[in-house]
Amino acid sequence: MGDDKRAHQRQTATYPVHVGLEGGGAFDGVVENIGTLGALIATNEIEVPLDSGQRVSLRILLDGDQGIDVSGEIIRVEQELAAGEIRRALAVRFDEPLDL
Image (cartoon, rainbow, N blue to C red; front, side, top):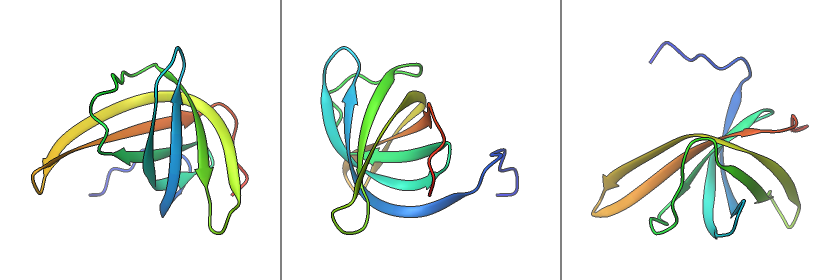
């Protein structure tokens, strides 16, 4: 548990997010944690190919109807089987810091 290498803190979240992929393709997910420089996004979408280095645009819906648009790069993709469903998590590094 102890070796968190992030330079900036992240906060736990459950924000809906729409992920658009450079070159086409999109899906919906949930932001599980977010910080000024990145986020972890979970999705059950397994049909869309995802790779480290892939560019994304995010539309994150914060509390209420407030939404923010941010672009970035996938730095890690993980996949696991939980409760009979395949779940994917992607870590995204933002191009510009967010003011949270």
